[in-house]
Image (cartoon, rainbow, N blue to C red):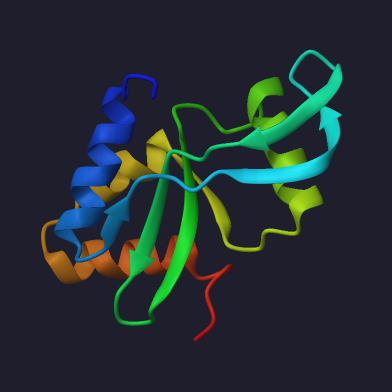
Length: 124
């Protein structure tokens, strides 16, 4: 596994503090390849940074952490795999969102912040 960068470490710490279960990622695989970051038709697997479980809802979310907006060729290739696999519980969390979450004080504020980010892929 690749070495974690500071943004990923901060996300894992903050999500844990907010009461979420932060787990090792689950690979997302497809049978027919999509274009990789170089435009070559060969990408068949992606591994998000984390799999996060929302204990109150007993639901999990694949989380990709990015320092940027997530609009890079690498992230686009990951998204193509996710889309082709039909995975609907995948979110990208930006470094800016993690910085914003770090400024929150209470566990409840952090929990609500992450629920808001995850809300588009969770069933309530």
